Length: 434
Image 1 (cartoon, one colour):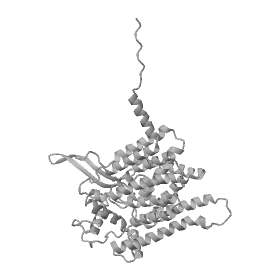
Image 2 (cartoon, rainbow, N blue to C red):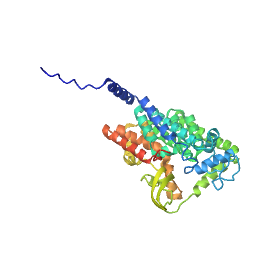
Image 3 (cartoon, rainbow, N blue to C red):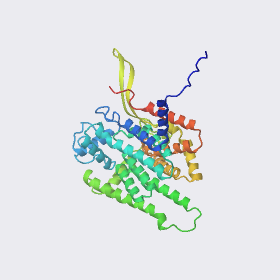
Image 4 (tube, helix red, strand yellow):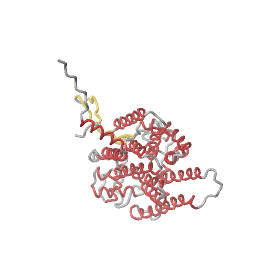
């Protein structure tokens, strides 16, 4: 009697169905974007209130300034203790960021959620704006998702998207301005950039980036033309600059009248610029200060907050277990691709005329290059987080390199895996909070 032949090895229907759904999920850029954004929100929101009662890095300035605005008690010996109630004591920056933080604290309390929610919301808005920038320049949704993913899980961007400082609020506003400008809404773009400047003066670099972009695009479009520039050529620039000037000056005036006691916006501007110019270092940087060229070498890391538990044998410390480590540091895998990514992006802009590549280079130049003469000539004290507004351009440049240079797909996926491993290695919570 002949033995029965073994049944063919069939993949269960449930497994085939699951694999099909998974392939469909990753083939749909809209669903993939939703997954990336949900993941970005989750890692920013988890344990937002921890460590209980501890201020992280410059929260010591801005949270206490918000407390003063609200008339709440500031701990004795802390920054701005004893300052006049209702007036922003942090006059080296415009009031808007502290006012938004005070509103959040009024709604959610004097705790981590109240302190940090504005940065979290701003960070998510910034991610949405970056996706909009990619799409507004005519690039694909897949490229947009990749840019958002690289930016969402870059460590310095992530940290400032969940701590109570001004940087992410300012950056989100100017990224929204860039998106609006690239869609042709130049008046609204000027308004958004002005809002960024009312949080932090460096928001003006967002305006500068759009002006550089306009010049490059105008020169390219008129190459070989013999006619003079007309109103339609200059209209975007005039709308952008006019809206920015009106909103930034009028906004600062209104905010000062209510929250800082300055009756003259020009006097406050002079104070802010003078204060910044006075922060100088002679010779080599020390402590947490660093120079712009150090940022490109992954130097200048800052310990924002570190919580460790010592292990002892008797009275002798035998070890230390780090539980929380908020660090001002760039994702080294993203930063390591910077030279090749920007060189390729420059070529891509030059040879292909890519609007996204042009925006990327303009944004990087406007947000990074001004720090070089400040460091070399005026010896201005600087810190690594000044590089934060440049990171969206770096994410775009790396995404262009991975998707437009002809690299094998395996290489691109390997890079993304290494990038995510670096993010995990720098994640501030090293163990589940007890």
